[in-house]
Length: 534
Image 1 (cartoon, helix red, strand yellow):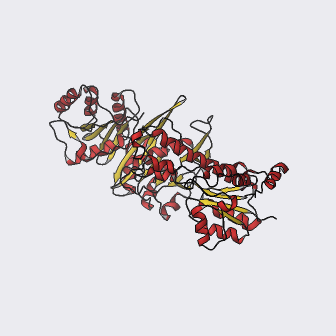
Image 2: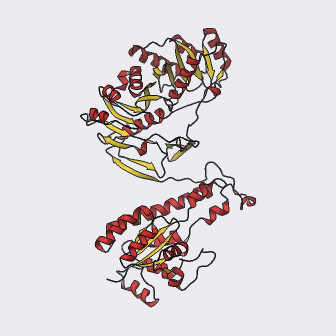
Image 3: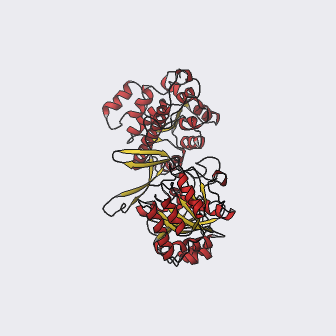
């Protein structure tokens, strides 16, 4: 068998020396460029510089080094075509059998604060993508590695069989084209967001929030049995770089395969429960709406309180907890029919309790680490809504409210206990479909009205649910996701027992509603923030 040749040219040097040593041990000839060649030579490896291989020096500050027929001819020539091989022989071009390339760090460069347009442009790789495309196109003859995570498996095949198998070469080719697409997409998105000003060429350019063209790339996690309904097909994807603590990072510990609706409802529950960081919290979701939310001393208490809100709707629901599920919590939850149970962890005792319930899906999801950025907090940057032949993009609703943000607009002042209930109700209302009315008291939902065309009807539904659950709405705090356009909505919630209200404000009839609150002797606060969830 003729000697194989590998060309190694990487920006990220992770694992490259060990790979090169292993390739050399197999008798594979090493070609390399620039810093990579120096690193390999300094490691005692026999390596041929690309400039020596092509007979043409690097030029233009390294912009031109691999753009040469001896490189691309060696990558693109089909070994099964005599004409191709004859051309190589005529021009003294050697074949290249393995290409190891990763690209200039464009994405990391533009992510840095203060990145200049000049720095961004300089980190657009030309030779690397060109070589990757050549090798990936000729995948039957050339294997291309574009990420250090691929090194071990490719090397194992070479060591075991002396070659990289055809299926592996095809998979590596697909991964290579995906990486090039991802790279080009990042360049396009960045440049499309630059508000070009000739005076800013050497400085940090102004950026528009939404670029003139946008695209996204997602990685498939699994095919689903069907979609929202059995006649629809479906699959589950994640972002290339998911936020920590998001549903796509979950590990399924037991249970049936997740369905489309399971995933959608689980996301609603998990995103809601993540808001509560200071104490144990439980969220129960049914058909994308929270039907019970509560905080407690521990997971067991939080669940018990949440379940009380609407036991009927909780049947077959999705449960999310922000604390480890222990024996006490498991013993209570297992009595209920539950589709999915999510938590940051499960004790061994809890897992044993659920083991006989083979259909119950247990998902373990690490909570986000927290920090100053939305990503560190596990928050999405954008919300995307599909419409006919188009998309609606918006920044995610990540607005967090504190006591300092509240404006008391009534004569009656809320008590400290009421203020805590108001903030709790507000956090819940944010995740209830509009029009949303949420009654709360003592850190638990007492009645939830969701998704009605009239806010009055949402309030009435919340009271009906409370009555069915034998819960009293007397002395409750009420949250409304949007303002009351007339006093009638406020009167309804007060009639059902509310003694304090939190709402955005901003209506032309705010004063009418404030006067009504004063007339009825309730406290009311404005947030200045609306939380429509259509």
